[in-house]
Each structure stands twice: as structure tokens, then as C-alpha cells.
Length: 576
View (spheres, rainbow, N blue to C red):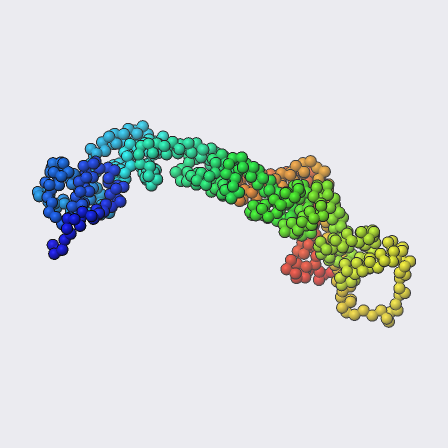
């Protein structure tokens, strides 16, 4: 014993520490006398004064036998160790020391609970193994949940799972409620009432998504997450209706999108989802026309489609412009720049867009004719603007082609054509006859003065070959245009084309949001393609007739491969 000790006055001002584990795990299952004995004994442990069991029992107003019985209870709980019964001497143990050591469970303590548990299991026609029953009783020993509350959980699991009920399901549900501090019968009853309500709602969501199974415990985490974010259940149901076939994970992404747009009520969610469907349809329609594959339509909707629709452009106008942009080799950014220009010029309504597209188509056809004369000329916006300028000078297509023929051997045909046409405009020459009068043909040169360098000869040969390829491409494209015009007179062909366009959009959407629907949509798309082939066969046409069939499949009648190398057919062309 130490030579120093606390005085009675000093110890009276100290504190007795009680572990939180005792308060949460053991205090709820012990009666008042047991708690008084444990706490007073804990206090005596730090007192230096002598104090025997009889005095302690007298102070606590109980018999010494009752005091021993209570300490035997705490010994069963592994909180104390009785070193001697006469005289009584007890050693207190840390609460954590009870972990890992099975505590003896007194059967009579849970007799009423066991009768209720067996009754519920008989109703479900299910027998638990002895070790499963032991696990349930150990749960009651180690957790402060009321036995009647646990029976309520068992009853819920019986109704939900029937003869497929498992011990794990019961304990998992009970453990979750313990973590949420729902320990009494009333608290558990309220939670299960909400749970049953959500079960009905989640089952409806499953039906909308095409999920044919009962909701599992983990599935409710999604619904809890959405409700905690302030999203109404009807808003989630609206999202499931829009999504169609899918999974909870894909629905979760769509609900997150609703949260970002602050569309958490049913009305705002349906309004946003309707607008979203419209934007998605525009994106996929334009992408198909542009020949662009879109993986995530939302990015294109936010950056392009929403702005276009807000400015007043409808789907038909955007489809016409996208078809024009395809001929120009444009993508989404270039089409957006074109729409900015049209909007600045006041071209917004459908008739104005249609007139613009027809005008550009005429310019493209004229540009193709110029290519057949001058060789390869890029289809750029500046080239089309140049054609518009020449027409504004009152030059006919005949005069423009005349300028093209005179510029065929020039290194840069378009600038040379512009020079010629500007001179003719200044001199008032707007017909071929006027050109002959104003500019008589130069006298032919003698042979000795008709010298051309090797570079000029090579340039002439190159121009001749480019004219040859331009003619081949033009002929193939005209044949395809003629075949398509013939096919579009067939109602069966038009219906099949419409089904294919719709199927391609649905397939692209399903690849992102509903992968399980991809096989079904693919089959529908194949049937539509077969119907289009059958409709063409009645017209003595084939699918390949609708696309230009170039003489050289490697270079598409350009003379050069995609990597920039010269094609073999270019080398085989005879020199001019």
C-alpha cells in the first residue's frame, strides 16, 4: 500500500468515470438495484477507506445475499470477477474485456421472447438451426434493443420473405435500426410503417424500369438517398417513366440530374424531363444528319441544342441545316457557328432556313461543275460566299463556268476566276458574246514561240487528271441522287427509312441509359433495314444504289488515299 492517500474531503470532490459501453449495452438490460450496486462498487474502487460488503448492502438497503446475487449477474456479463464469496471481494473489469468471450445466456430470461419467435417461425413454416437461435439471443444480450421490438422485426421479415426468411436478414435489419438508435417497440413500429410504404413505391419504380424481382434491403438505400436530397417520390417515378427499361443505378444518374437542375417536385421534374427529351431528340437527329456518333447527348444539349431551340429554330430547320453541313464536312461546332451567322442575319423561321439551304444547294451544285472543270476545290464557306458575290454581280451560271474554263490551268483557280469576273463586270461583259467582242481571241502563236516549261506541262497534266476525277465523282453522285429520288416516291421505302431513323436514335439512347434494351432495339432496327431493302427491290434498286458508287473504292475517285498518299488509279491515268 502506498504511503500517500487521499483525504475524505479530497475524494468527495472527485468523479467516478463510467464507460459509455456500459451505458449503451448493459444499463438498458439491468434493473435498478443491479445498476446501483455496479455504480456504488465502481465508486468504492477508488476509495482508500475500508468498506465491507455488509456495510455496502446496508447502505443500499438490501440483504448481503441480494448483493452477492447481483454481483453474480455482473460476473455473467464479464464486467466483474468474484475473487471471494465470504467475505465478498470483487474485482471490476473493463467493459471492453467482454468482447470475444461468449457470455452465458440464461434461457429463462428470454422465455417469453423465445415463445414469440417460435410462433412466428411456425407461421412461416421455417426452422432455425440451434446456432441461429443462439445468434439472435446473443444479439439481444449485446444490444439495448427491446425483445418485443426484435419480435416486430421478425414478424416483418416473415411477411416479406415467407419461408425464405433467414437469420441474417433479421439481424441485418435489427443492426441497421440499432445504428439509427431505434430501439423501442414504438420506434421500430414507426420505421417499419415507413418502410412498408416505401416498399410499395419502390415496387412501382421496379415495374416501370422492367425489374422483375422483390426490392432488396440495399435497394432502399437509393430511395433513402433521393428522399434525403429533397426529391419527391413522384418526381422519381416520373424519371423512371422517362427512362423506361433500366437499372436503379441509371435511374440514380437521372435523379442526380434532376437535383442539379433543382427539379425536385413532380411538376418541375416532368417539365424538365419533357424538355430534356426534346433536346435529346434534336441532338440525335442532328448527329445522324452530320454522320457524328454521340455518346453523351447531355453535353451537346447544354452547349448547342438548348441555345438553338431558344432562338426559335425547330427540328425540321435544324435537320435541313445539318444535311447541308454534312455536304460541307461540318460538325457540331461549325454548324453552331453557321447558326450564329444566320441568327445575326435574322434567318430564324422555317421558310427562311429552307430558302437558305436551297440557295446553298444550288451553289454546291455549281461548285461541283466548277470542280469538274478546274479540278479539286474545297467546299468551304468562303468558296460559297464567293459564288454568292459573283451572282450578286449579275453573272449567270454560264458566265461563271466560262470563267472556270479559262482558269482551269491556273495554280489557284478561284482567285483567278474572281479576277476574270471582276474585269468582265467592270467592262460590262455579262454574256459570252460580249466577251468575244470586248476581248478578241489572241492570234495563235507559232510553234517556235510556243514553249512551255516542264513545270507548266506537269501542271496541265495535273489539272486534266483532276477534271477527270471530278467528272467521275459527279457522275457517281448524280446516279445516287437519281436513285434516291426514285426510292422516295415509294411509301414503303419512306416508312422503312423513318423506322430506321427512329431506331438509330433509340439505340444510341439505350446504349447510355438502358443497355439491357440494346438487343431488342437492334432486332427492330434490322427488321426495318430488311423492309427498306425489300421496298428497293420492288423498284429494281439496291441499298448501294442510294450512295455514290465510285469507280475506285480505295480513294473514292479523288486520286489520293485518306493518308494523303497517291492512289494506284492516279498513276494509271494516261497523260493528257
